[in-house]
Image (cartoon, rainbow, N blue to C red; front, top):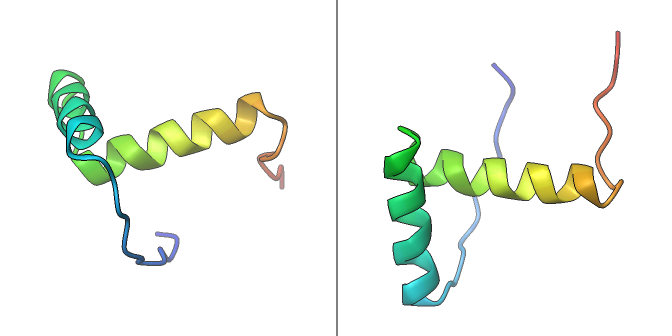
Length: 53
């Protein structure tokens, strides 16, 4: 499993509530949902490319 870097995230409580609900609806942890959202946004912006081995 890849190593993960921990950091503090300050977020608007209403946004956090929405993310928590979205995560629960998709059977993900809140942390997993946030990571999925960030990864998706990076891919769509062309700033994250998956390395093929």
